[in-house]
Image (cartoon, rainbow, N blue to C red):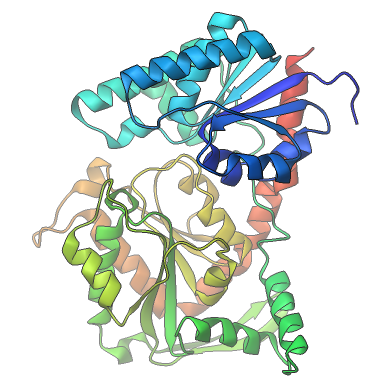
Length: 439
């Protein structure tokens, strides 16, 4: 424990970000700093305080643009900072960062850190894009220190002219890393074994446990299960995913037969995929903002090839039930889902966008397809399909027809996540960064 701790404010627009994005990090930092969480309380803030062992302060803020409410929030932050006098202000999420960094600059907080994650203007057009881009420029101007979440974000901030200030990616990137003890197939299966033993049922083999997990979602050993985890919106590539799944369902079953002997964790296993059937496990909620087409939503909710289970607090069983992750997003900062999937020994299909192309090394722990918003990705063929749509279908089909290759990439995936994104290593890198500011 450190005596005479300096005061560290961690600010996000709403409490959900404190609750989910940096879970556990604030408790770790509280051993070294007087940590205070600042956010708009939607009902989660007190829970964050109790779990992390920190003080929290509710400052109402809106995620959408609202000039009157934004000015009120700015005034409240100004008064809070004048009263509390934090030594370090660390902001992330767009609106909270903008307001917090402006108020922090006005009140003279010595160290004002802007952690840049996803860049919202990338998915916008017209005047909205201009406004969102200007917000990023103002946030960077008011910050004394800028931490891009990954090298892709850093490159974009430079090439789009957002800031010329020095920037540094911490460790290998990402805001919170991955708890690789929690996201671990073996520990999940061990828990399942313990549960089965308590119920008086035999727990003979790991395969049996995986079978049980798959069965609870309605999947059989004849299925090849792709899993998608995230918001079910157009920006996540759902339209293209629906198109790819529909085409896969039309393939003659005999074309998907294959067999191979592979080595995983030092053991040889015969991996036979006789007449594998493509299935999709869909984890997330349909949202009104950036909605998908009604036809696609109806298909996802009614197709026998899709199992939609809504939002899940614990996604580990979903990952354990799957054969591969499919994540065809349009834009990200540094997404958690591919890292969590990798920690659970899953190969991933991702697009060539920020974060995804840092987590996945093509052919090693997954496959990278052309970015949907790039010129190459938007190019259409004679059937009117974009290059990204075609690439997604062809890569998903490749996964179906090359299960041994998928397992090889999945076996590589966990080691890569543990070596690069282990949560405690990410936390330690952030702590060392804070300490460097005090010299």
